[in-house]
Image (cartoon, rainbow, N blue to C red):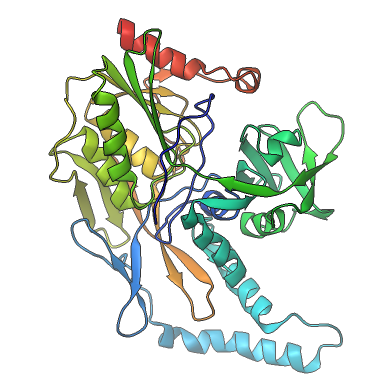
Length: 436
């Protein structure tokens, strides 16, 4: 697949995300990306390439050192069949004797699987139906049809929360704002749904309408907003010179897809040709993507350094290091911009640069996505995403559930965001020019 390089939007905080078939991330995030981005979400992930082996199973392929089955020491499926046979007995009785309408077989299977997944309380291990899997796959194409917002799942309210609506996209135009909760879709409550199901209902063809019931802090009651879906393009990189005299290079990456490492290197080389005094690397809102590309991107800035530690359930671990390629001048000052929307692969890069003392992090605490998922395509086209490992920064810091704390904290208010102001970028420029 190919991506075009685009000029940055006026507000650098607005970045989209795409995922890969080898994506690992919070379902709440990644799924959104797949379904929404064009509408879409914090799709966080790190990617692993997958391919069927001779037995028809899915094997992990990685350019990093070593391979692992994730350390799973549980019983083989044939050993579990007697237990699952009880499920078959119960279903036989239900379909034989029940007086009333029954669900279609595929729906019953999917809900049964999700019922088991709910028991392990890992939102990143999830099942996508064939339709949802198609949404997931379209995330690799660089454009989507949806509402144009980054979202996540609010467990407490059983609702979709708007992390960031993209300026001049359908959600924004309809008046949807950050921190709004979507509590109903076309009149159907989101209670009892998960993010996957909710996204599937919000997503739809360009030109069609969806009615979203919103809950907003400060409003006395929930209210409806009608959004006309559209096609949203998803550029992944931009570059320019910033500062009063355009003396600082600026590169923004919005997702870690197939060619991200190459594109970042090209973008950085472009700005270096202009002899900048310093460099800003913007990972705000970047929900992640491919593990391999996270390593490639880190290799643009670091040489002969650890990037992350991947630890499996059986206690084994792999240490990933930078590629054998030249990094940029280590003396060139570097700031990495991060936000609560920076997740997974973004956190790997930011964490490695922070641990190595190579760059200063400015912005807000990152999302906190420290696990790895492997997607398996099932026989009917559905996708099963399974958490296989946890990852840690080179200094063995766990960020899962906590995120990375920036060296300099700078918030962006809703008022600043809507006015197109960017205090985080301004602070990065100030720091690079003054050293404070």
